[in-house]
Image 1: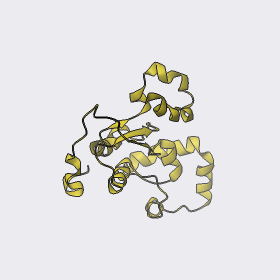
Image 2: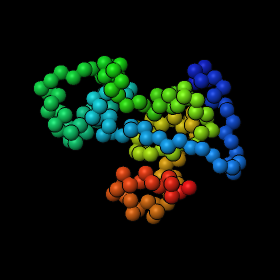
Image 3: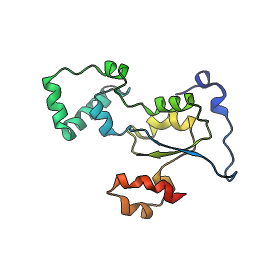
Image 4: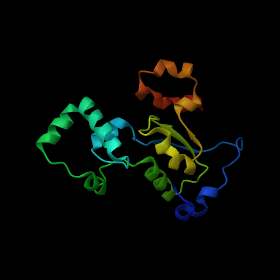
Length: 162
């Protein structure tokens, strides 16, 4: 968990009241879906359970990666992270946003809302940035239905919702 010692008064900043006029928002895609993580060959703090899940996903969905790994030596997950080859975790992304000056009250539209690890992986992010919305929170299931099999077409949904 992100703590007060690390972030100071940032956590207790006031969130602007609803209806206080137009608000800017940030559209963000964390790229923390299982396919990205499996393809990266990185580790994200989930231990053997995570390694097993990502290995199984990789073997099923990226057989060429699995085959090429057997014929070559890949850098360790630690080395890959040092080289900047791993997607940021939601917690790391929140720290980057805070470091860039985004305030606690910032409205964030989260694209690609199927985060690996679900809500538990997002806890640190949502504690720091509680004004988080997704297409699923902006639109009803019936409004989303026509786009169910076309995830790449969902990016325009934020524009429609405004």
